[in-house]
Image (tube, rainbow, N blue to C red; front, side, top):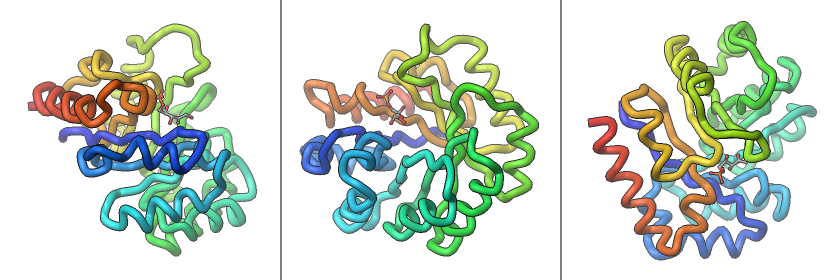
Length: 213
Ligand code: 5RP
């Protein structure tokens, strides 16, 4: 199973995000993400605008909902993303409420894993019907991707979860995950800040093809 390449638009304006998608980038990536930073800066309408502009492209709304699952889940799901995120620390009642709103619109809930969580939590989320997780190395965390992170990713995969990885992943980090049955790799800055974002996406996709051949 070869991972999809997801581009995180953590731009601070929608216009800037749309500029990032120019030059073939929108077509080249597998999934477009309305990033947390973009949604905070522009509101949930940014998700709806991306949905209308790219109706066929898988779209993630990464708001990392932490509470008020029905209200925030409803606001996000109403913009018709394919995937929407909830933070691991949220109460399971919040996760269930977000899932209910997502289900109404045919969206999939992904639990974003940061900091403190345990494998038993993952079992409980599965019981709620949530089978997607995002293993995230915070941009504020010290150090780099290491064996502990990779062991966690492997354990999540072997629990039957659809696992996405993110956090400072660029071309050079792709090989860390070589061959793992992960669902998607999210890249933000490594694509957005590249001199030629489309060229960078194509280079990364070619590398993924090699590493998962
Ligand atoms: C921040 C995020 C980012 O969108 C994601 O981690 C990708 O960012 P980068 O590749 O720039 O580290 O979820 O909360």
